[in-house]
Image (cartoon, rainbow, N blue to C red; front, side):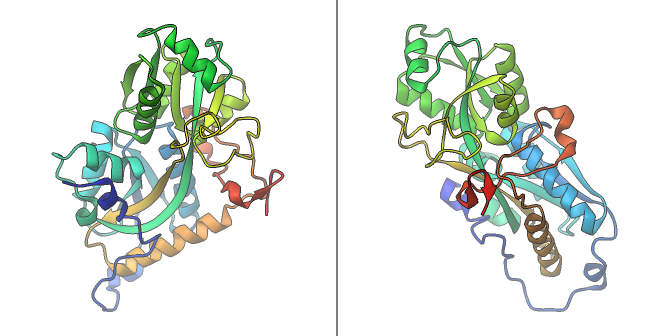
Length: 318
């Protein structure tokens, strides 16, 4: 059975390509790319993984020409993941993967016959994605402890939502269990739909990626309770960590990266790896306060990406 540890090895090379037999590149490899590259995201548009994929696609387009982001959600990311695994290994179909699609889903859905170690070639790691706990503004709680008390006084009356089989689903469920809450889980195909219902008050809580939640927090549309990191996020210095709030096990970032179908020629993988790493270096921001797109309608602007808080001092990158 595929385990989370086994799935993590897909990107454990930190962006390095798996060695292939030593040989010179073919004519087709030397000309790569000579047509559009398709980057599949196995989640719906508007979520944090889709947003990050768009940032990267825009950056790669400057070097390679057209890079198309295609969303193929379904079955907890399995639909899109299997589509890439079955694609020709020619470098023109890539998967923008994450801990959700390459680790969580294979571990949960053991009948899908997708072992990331066997069906993919790692291309490059991209970024870490912090998670933050937020609630609908109609909930009067201002802290994690107050939310727990509020929920315990209303057993079975509050809902929490997340993309089915994703890290936000597991984190939210773990919080519910450890806090001893009686809440109803509402499954979604991705984060965008989950956040839409949270804003509308159909759900009351989620733990999801900071990428799409940050602008809603700054606009006052959602209330942050805690962040699932070892330290506070520089752009939200007043928001405590979940560890500070009494949940020391909630220290987790989702990871993202690009993989290609197994058998993709090394020359193409190396070219993609270099281009991705170069584009990420170019897109580093001098300011650490993220300006992520606040809604699916703005996702295609792709004008920033998250920066590690360890490199930030007083709101600026060191």
